[in-house]
Image 1 (tube, rainbow, N blue to C red):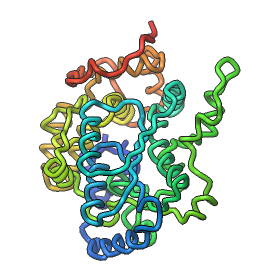
Image 2 (cartoon, rainbow, N blue to C red):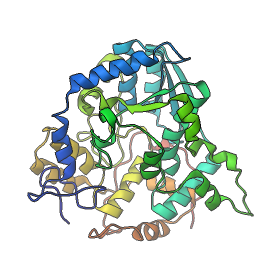
Image 3 (spheres, helix red, strand yellow):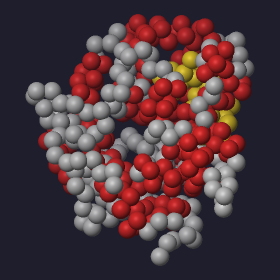
Image 4 (cartoon, rainbow, N blue to C red):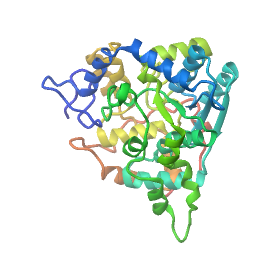
Length: 389
């Protein structure tokens, strides 16, 4: 399988392309980031905030999971601009103890309003199974909800400005730092449908899970529905990424919130702590299973992704990344058993579903993957007595 000569991401990575020297377009996008006039971008941020400050119930809405990126957003915007934000969390159902403790502490330290929305768990399980069967991605409810719900709340509270964290250009090349006017990474319905929904709208999903034997109320899918464009245009909504205005550095950002707010890192299932020193993806206890699905489908996992960031930011050599990836990528997570309980599948059925969407030329081996070590809080994770024999 062909891999980038620099960051070692494989040809199965979404949106990846290689130049004649074997380097990938994501590494190239990182190089272009250095050429951006960040002082000019910062002035644009100043202007946007000034245009919205003090005119609404809140100056902006910030989607807030309690992970490193959303915590840094809140800290930076409140410290730099003294704004009054409304924090909004779409609770996917898998929040871990350390993250919740971080959230409770940070809300008190910063003094900020917070809305925490938890959707109907029975509906969540249905859409997890449906999106996994159709797309081998059980995170549809999370990826749609964390974007659509804050925008719906912006309409309810009449707050046009919404701040997300890092732009898409940090991860892939669906869009780059210069796609939009002024280089902004604007969240809109086109991007929502391209990147978040897996091509399945909330209306589609309702038709898939609503049965005569077990009917589903259409209203239960409203949190996953992108609002009417006409209503958003009336509001003059402006959903932007903070990382479009300031250089986004995960490592430095994490060090800031650890030092200033006491934010704590946790273990990440399937990834040695020495590799994940800056708290990547520690919010969700289903992350290990999500990463395992990715490994089976595409031949790389979270270890490779973290190390690719490190290589692109000159914190690790390509040779170091290659050795670590080969040693740790693709370990089977203990959380897989919990996921199978939630959706009522056997591991054999799980493997058969994944096998239908494997990305060539990768060929998974379902039997030879080493079992990952349980994280310290594994026994605290919600279980259901629904194991299929």
